[in-house]
Image 1: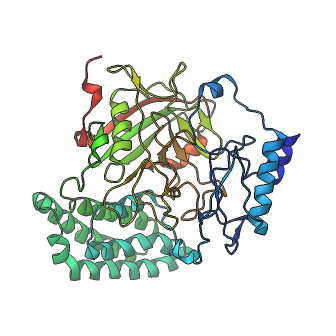
Image 2: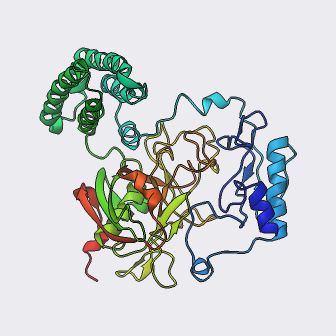
Image 3: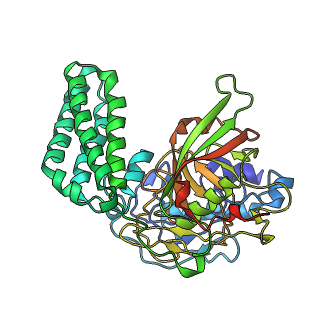
Length: 453
């Protein structure tokens, strides 16, 4: 009965391993305050409805549903009332921990403009470059997506304005773009710019022919050219990983993998291949660990172990271990929490942004996109990630883009960029047939999969 009461009245609060801060002046989102303001409450952890990505531990393997006590439910309800009414902080000794920090006065600082939800756009902006000229080409091409939301052929007028803006930006800024290319990649970058210019002309012809259906595919092609040009502006790996993690598998750059999943009991979908881009520029340790496990075929044949409408999760090996046991050392491999923040040159390690007091910081790899990929870990052990990974499904009031409570708490290291919508169709028991490296494998350093045994 207690579990029912808690879940029925406060479904968002009946979770494990999430923080629920409050700002009395923040707007209400689906009846719960805007969680992005990380100011008061930390680590509310009750057990009636497990929404939060975490390790699937040995207890989970034996008992899928854990009990929820009346005391825990009462704590959740009390905190919910406090969040909404501005009640004083409570000093919970066990499952909730109060912290004292000033209320953030300006929510507008936290949410600056419409959130970017497209995974490939997020990856473009996450590159370690500073070239305004190419960004001025990129932005109007991305805005074509919003222009196409207008019904009928009227959308083409807006598309044409976007295209003219991008064409002017390319013409006026081409020399600055070329000067920003890495010397070793300049020839390829210039060739890509020529293709981009030709492609813009082709898109102009599509618009003039009033062929609406041809716009989106050509837009995608043009943005791929832009993204490739931006990648050619990165000259080597931009920083040194801290010495304590330097000997671990590291992805110094980006890599692409394909994950093929065999889907059961779905007449409309038998198997699906997901394209995943791993970002080692912003999460070299986390993505390097995953790629190393991929090369070991660790995930091949593994089942989807959680699919609840909030996340899809896998990576818990058979047996008592909750993570990867390296056969060369016979010890579990633990990966540190790794968060790159806008304006920083090196990721933060071992602490959440809340613990660091960085309440206004924006992560370089945010939980904005459907199919955001991150590491599961134990709630109170920041450096406990190993092999369990999850993909976020944007179906929860806890995770509005640019205003969620996952950013800065879990290490994002990539995005699903093809067939991501099919993640919602996966179920527990569906089998990962294989995960294979498509490109970027040579960016992996210290690969332990090559060690015999």
